[in-house]
Length: 143
Image (cartoon, rainbow, N blue to C red; front, side):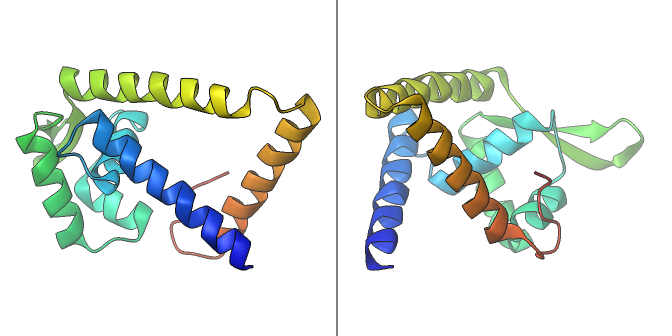
């Protein structure tokens, strides 16, 4: 278990460093929220809090930072103009696309010598690990 803990910590450290390379003022949590907002084609801050099991004040601070950077904007919900929906700006979408391209290139470089069987096994283990990590939690993302 010590090796697993150490290696997952190293993985998380690399993820934080990668987020910082995308933009020096973009913490990993904010990057994750921005990616979710884009993936959902817009969502409310309360949806982010529920999905990631975060306090609303934490999400509020992260969203404020994303707005300040020009990566997110608020728009009235089409069905209820009292509610605001978060959407990525063009710049936010560009930042995510650049990060995705860079991340994919890094994964391809890191895994280039792995066999197809090793890659399939690794993918299966990651799915199993991440599914087990959210099973039974409220608002678990569907798999």
